[in-house]
Amino acid sequence: MDDPPAWIAEFTVTPRDFAAQLDVVAACGRTPVPVSDLAGHLVHRTPLPPRPVVLTFDDGFADLPGPTAEALAARALPATAYLTTGALAPGPGSGSLLPPAPMMTLAQAPALEGYGIEVGAHTVTHAQLDTLTARALDRELRESKSVLEDALGHEVAQLAYPHGYNSRTVRRAAEAAGYASAVAVRHALSSGRDEPYRIARLIVRRTHTVADIESWMAGEGARGERVKVAPFPDSPATLGWRLYRGARARVRGPEFAG
Image 1 (cartoon, rainbow, N blue to C red):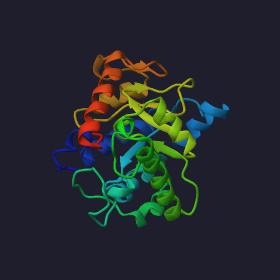
Image 2: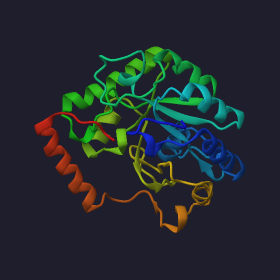
Image 3: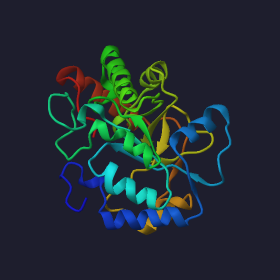
Image 4: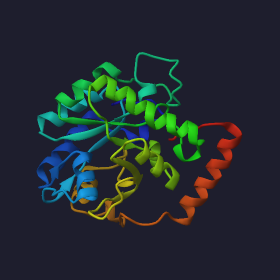
C-alpha cells in the first residue's frame, strides 16, 4: 500500500517498491518454492532445487488476492500465504486481535491457489501463542486449520506463528494439531538443517531497499549487518521476553502478537 494504517506501516511496502523487489528475486538465480517444499526437505530430505528461496505473506490483507497475487504470478513466483481466519472480512465479531485494516475475505482463499500461492494458517485471533492456556492454544491452531480446509476443500498443513512467538509447548501443539511445518521469524536465514516447526524467516520492512533484497538473495545481511543462519538456540533476551509476556498475559488476558 502507498498509505497503510499506522500500526502495520513498518511491515508494508509500496506497490512500486514491491515490484522492484520481486524483480530482484526473479533475476537473482534462485528458485522460489512454497513452504511445503522446504518442510518436505527438512523432514524427509525431499530434494530442493539449487538455491531455493521461500516467499511468505502473513495475515490476509486485501491486496493479497489482487495486486500482490498478480505481481507474483506475472513473474511466475510461487509463494505461501498464512491467513488469520478471525480477521478475514466481512467484519467484526470474530474476536480477532488484529487492529482495523482492509482484509481479504475467506471466500477469496481459493483464488490464491489459482495464482500459485499455497495457503497456510495464521491462527484465529493473532494472539501471542506462547502465552496462552493449553485450551486456548489448541483452539487457535485447530479452528483456523479447520476453517481454511472447509473453504479450500483440502488439507491445510502449514502454519505461521503470529509475530513468530512460539515455545517448545507451542511447537509440540502445532505438530499435534496436524501441521507439517510452522514458520517463526527469528530474523535469520533458514538452512537445510533448520527446524520444521520454527523455520526462520526475514521480515521485509518499509525501510528495506532493493540492495537489501539483493544482499539477502546472496545469503548476506542487509546493509552490512551480520545475518544469522538457523538453527540456533533462543537467546537469553528472547527467553526473558517470553517470561515477561507470559506473566503479563496472566493478568491482562490474550494479547495481540505484533
